[in-house]
Image (tube, rainbow, N blue to C red; front, top):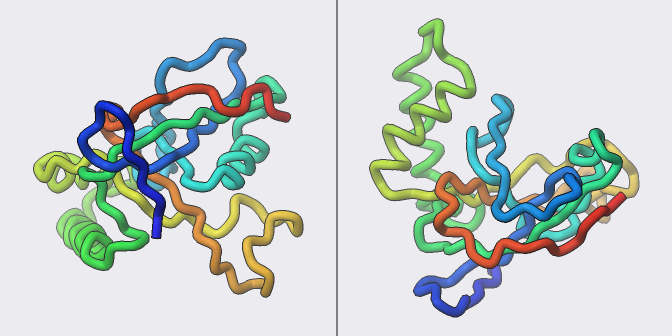
Length: 182
């Protein structure tokens, strides 16, 4: 069961999360939206539920430019999220609707990951007031023996859970947690 937290002034329960960014010399006031066309759920702010994976993300992807990365801690309101990891109904809602959407646009020249993300957000998520998705990422960034998330390889039973947030209004108490990490 995911831990939920009650935050003062917030009506709903929240998840404690971590946002990793390259160190910039200045403190971020809010998370940076990922706009990479390869991002699994498209444009959004991405957060880890496990600090270990936030650190790995920084080491593998966020320190190239400056040699350092920062991790920010925050709380994300859980009432308008689809939870593909722990809610069977939410998982099948996302899966089934993505299958329908892909079938609908299959064969068009515009079919690409970015367009599928855009269409899924506008045709399903926004209409339902969904502000984010809790999902299970791939079991590893890159193969490293010190990063095996299982005591019995290749049985990866530890989930790398992230939240993709499409509306930053559900993020609270965003603040630096670990700075200038190598």
